[in-house]
Length: 257
Image (cartoon, rainbow, N blue to C red; front, side):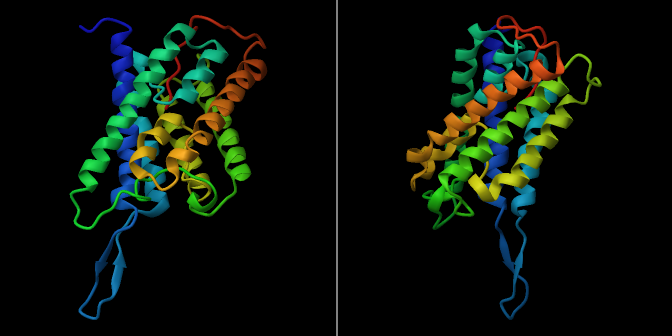
């Protein structure tokens, strides 16, 4: 038996790997796929599109939250970990280890995604690794200000859902479903805006493999989600618990992504 907190860090590493591999992998391999439909050269779109990518990210959360929440709380996201600590649901002393594990798991997934995709003749990683971006690197060419607002707002609401779904008063057993569906909704809203981050580990995982401006814009996808996590972590206990913040040991484990 691996002792704590090593088992928690490993759970965060594996869970973040699965989130990045499943979500970004769907975007890289399956979002756009065309096949020739007849001898006239008619092309048929077989890809899953934005909807499929959004569902993939949500499913990674649902599956790994059920699998690993009892070990680490299943954060898989530095913004969730920060918000959980701010709200008093998570011990501050464990935050650095969680962040390191989450980033490491994401980078390992990015490496695996790059290695598999490189096996396709003619494939080039530059601009094709599902990286986040603004301006010319945004799918819809949204401005830096628009991306920052969206990432902060969506991450804050994500934290509120996470904290609410894992509250002791919430219906038991449904937390992972609520959180996974929320992440799906977030992607449906914001894939055209920023390619959806709300998770610094997810953004870091593919930025350096992607190149094409992604490394230089990565700071946005750390700063904005962390601010959103901070806001969500402050709002939930203030409005929906007893108005008191509990900085210290977790009073209840948070399960999220």
